[in-house]
Image (cartoon, rainbow, N blue to C red; front, top):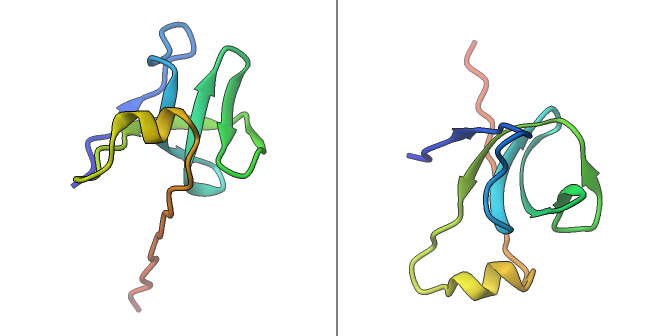
Length: 79
């Protein structure tokens, strides 16, 4: 389970790479002084929640340096 944290622009998290939820879905993004920037360089203006990325075997520095992190999201429709 992902422990989501509601994003508060007045109290942003420490700089680094996070999993973020926004209007377009879920992606990895880097929080910077200017705001959220996705792994592919797009700025995200509608982030509502974030979660620290803590994959076993990966160093926190990997995320801070912006090294590639693959994120897969599966959507299941129930009829």
